[in-house]
Image 1 (spheres, one colour):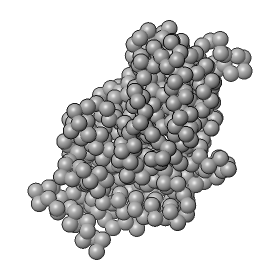
Image 2 (spheres, rainbow, N blue to C red):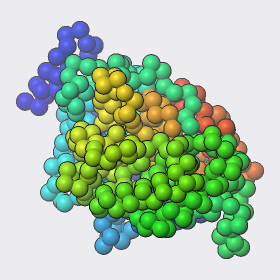
Image 3 (tube, rainbow, N blue to C red):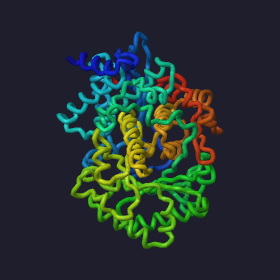
Image 4 (cartoon, one colour):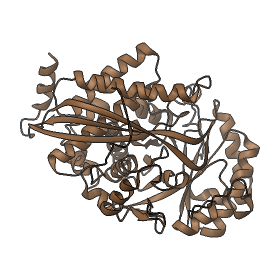
Length: 492
């Protein structure tokens, strides 16, 4: 019955080309440990180290055998913010959801990409409900499989990710995620070509030094990379920023004043920024209190005229609760988007009904889902003749040689022009990995990377932008085979 369902879906449009079926043959999972060059404080967490994992999956695709890769840093306190859990437990659970998604992929009936993904997704949803795993965490495992699938398919089709999505070689049924898009195709909404450049939106962590006066002998880093906010602005030509709130109105106002002063001194009025609420509020009036404090401060009020949007101020447990999320009732309020709450396929539509303006994309939340979301956002803007609805690009401290490149490739394909990039700031280039990997990145992606004095590669941000030309020329961002033989292989 399941196979007939997929055949019926595939042949629904008699004029549509037959899509190649995918079958997972085998998979390997590798791990290495990474250290940051400086602490990254976000919300309730401070990151100084994190495991980094690589998943390789070998597929049979239309008679070809092709390998796809995915990678991610396992960052505690984001997928699951249960305060009683220790970091090691969260990392174990992240590995568990990857293993489980791979197990479901092994069991999946051969099918085109979207139908293959949907089998894994639905199986993982049911399993997570039985296990009591949060949806955002459970679906992270699915996204790892999804990324290997898209990488392998792009290699088999000899095209890039943007082409896969725009020409719908994945077989994405938009109506299966957003019913109002019935009969529509991704090519109607996605950019004709992927973006060749993306604005790097620089994260200002809650404990990041802003000026040289904030540096002490204890926290000063001597690695040749900029450390303070003002140094980063000068070194990278930054113009877009992401500021963070911590839930204490007085402390947040003081921090915002200090950040605003640095940005305006160095950028004048040529800047834009977003404010990340970090899920710090469980009552919307408490967040509005922060906003009212901003508006009551002459300097901050002027600074906030360049605000792009506010990201996820309400905790995920209440952010989509109509009794609490009174976004639509906020008169003259700025656009507010969800991030962590975008865990189920229906979350964006729920959010839009409550008055939110959109959602974020990061690969760890899903690319096929995000493609449908971007199509819905563009559809709403067109039918309502507005630019209110938006999708942003966000980060999970992404670093190369795989995770960053694939995330940027997805952002380019979706048309997300301003993307939070922070991995390059908190990690010392690609020094967490063997130098051979840096050399491969410099050879293949010399526009995105530049060489440091120690021979390792670092992200090259010029005039506040990232050049994606070589990424778009690769199947799914990564144009080389990444050697994994030096990393620990984990059981699957």
